[in-house]
Length: 200
Image (cartoon, rainbow, N blue to C red):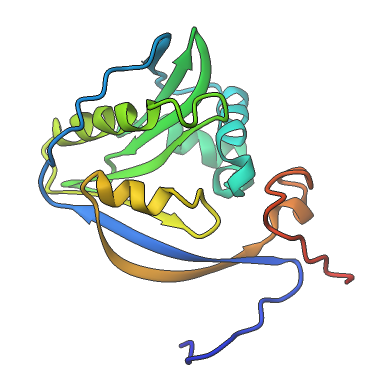
């Protein structure tokens, strides 16, 4: 168990404070229309190369790496599950964002991944997309909708989820290998997070 005070993070690692949030009833929707040219497309059992490319496009600058470290077999097992719904946010037919809902836990839905590429940030797409996520989640027989975000994510993410109706319920510390040092992501990703090389 961590004690109060500072704790060294080993070289070659990244650390984040993770906040878990949930809701137990459908909140009011924001009612935002889709921006011009933006649509949502369900992609059942997506191609792994396409998925990894979109995942990196959306999350690379926030050091999203968890899905990128999975083997083809591990990733396929998740994405082929009918209880996992992958949706592409498209701008004029090109995938620019991702919405992934995970219903594998009975009575629950996890907002597994929710994000937009740079071209859609600040366009109002996020509020519209959250309305779609809430509507789809609560259309199923669930009693809990949950998500987690961390201090490596967009600085606006936590307040956005709270404004959307989620309530923070737990904090965790996550320490992991820096994905830019393992080759999972390019060293140019997330320049706002300094790389601490193992060799100093």
